[in-house]
Image 1 (cartoon, rainbow, N blue to C red):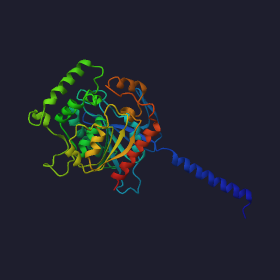
Image 2: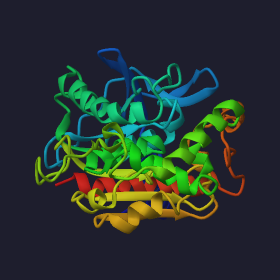
Image 3: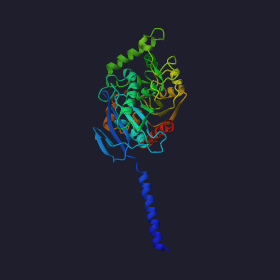
Image 4: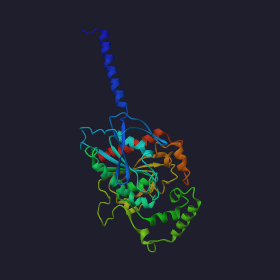
Length: 371
């Protein structure tokens, strides 16, 4: 018969084991990070791993990763036996690092994340930023999916038949186009011709330090007031993005894309009929203090016309660049100086609130990508 002391010791051991197991479960899954290429386009991969993570610094950015670590296979209970893939499309002149907190959140939720560095619109080369890049960004995402599908390490572990796409800011153009939305230069010009002052952060994006170019752009938009469907050049009426109804009933340029999420996206350029034709699930993360892409003209326009779109989370205190994390103060100040309005992060928007938004994005993809 056990003595009271033996029983107490036994119970203490059980309690200690339970506490240890609980603490172990509470530890966040480490994330690995490595890079592959698609032609001349770098693609950063973020994924769950069993390897220990450590702080790694790249210039002004520090991220906690296991560099070049082996990815964890999906749990044996997974329906497909493979992990789902999510492609993140960065904003104008961006890179993978400012979106790392979201990428890590998605990786800890069980996804493999691919972050292509968009050709002609990235931190090293933004010579094609804007409409020229918007036309090629969707193909960058398709190329990134192909690269993962052919990667000898990830190919056996990742299901590339049903892929999620998330885009922030100009990355929202990428994501919306892949969902099937269409845009035209004529719609952009007419929007800024009539709403320049209200949406100056978009219409004169990046020109705060270039007063001469501001005047040139303002003159172009003023002239655009005279444009119509009848007299506009054919190049301005050319449709970009999703497929037209005459081409196919499915407007997606890449049918592997199964769900789309966007945060503070460019939206004013997209035609209402094409937004209405989107059939896949789409979630929006919005920011009440976004003065770069004013919700009235962008997020609200999408929500008004897209029948399958829902708000994942709305954050009244968030500004446009509050969705970048990590976002070092030195980088934030430099970028804000280029903006016409609303470039600095809002101190009232907390890290906790941002993480809640990221968790909602991860939950959205868990619901929409898993069979």
